[in-house]
Amino acid sequence: MSIFPAIEPYNKDYLSVNSEHNIYLEQSGNPNGIPVLFLHGGPGAGTSPIYRSFFDPQKYRIILFDQRGSGKSTPYGSVSNNTSYDLIEDIKSILDHLVIKKSILYGGSWGSTLALLFSQKYPSYVQSLVLRGIFLCRAKDIKWFYQSGADQIFPDYWSDFIDLIPIEERTDVLKAFHQRIHGDNISLSNALCKKWAIWEGKCSTLYPSIDVINQFDQCSISLAKIETHFFKNDCFIEENQILKNIDVIKDIKCEIVHGRYDIVCPFKQAYDLHHVYPNSTLHIIDDAGHSLLEPGITKKILEIFNNHDQLIA
Image 1 (cartoon, one colour):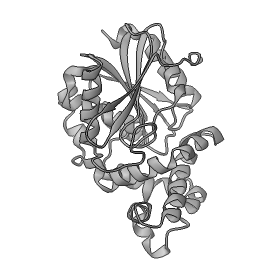
Image 2 (cartoon, one colour; image 1 turned 90 degrees about the horizontal axis):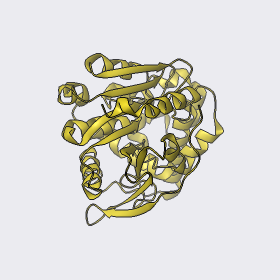
Image 3 (cartoon, one colour; image 1 turned 180 degrees about the horizontal axis):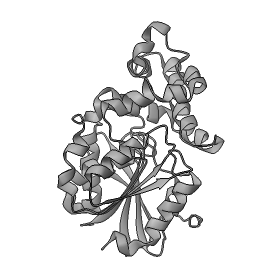
Image 4 (cartoon, helix red, strand yellow; image 1 turned 45 degrees about the vertical axis):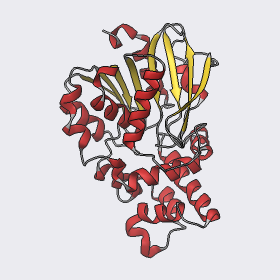
């Protein structure tokens, strides 16, 4: 199953959410179709035109936006007034601005986190959830990828990732990156942003993909600045907040798609979510890692959205 042909937005806009941040917002497909709001990953990755092509443009009103500091939103790379709760309120502002009372939310990786957090704050806005590469933002989930876990799977990639960090500071890699990426040495900051993004890109697919790595590299500044800001602050949520509050969304249908060999966000996170979320369906992709562009994940996401009656039932 192939993605849909490339399309152009029928509307592009900037939504001012406060005196500082302006959010890039676009709409594609059918203006009278089923609203689906795409929540990109990172935080800080931004959207890409290819994301429009995962939805039938005859059936769906396809809404993409770049979260604070990401993509075409301004100011680029900003972490000022940029927290999970700010992003939650931005989603509400977007839906209110577009006069949408209920929408399907699609989110992958950090996008899945944000979709769940928004749904738990504003469940009445959510028609259904389609989530890929679940990230629960618990301390152990962050530690797995940035301290102890993924480094055992990809020791060569890890060695390249941390080679600019002094040996005596490698007991807290996230802290070391955060200090330097947000420091005054711009050339070092930019170099470490690139290291940060390429580490994630290399680990995101079952088989090496230069296209995926390049995609991460292109957004390295915003990705690294905003991810380190969020992860150093535990994503600005309570420990295990999503699973603790799952009853709030117990009546919202959820499709979970997760690669069995996901090294960025190990499958256990999807398993834990599904275990406490009776209204969820878990789709395990046995030949995939983390990326939306993994063939098996792409196929399953397309299948779910092509069966649109199930998402709006």
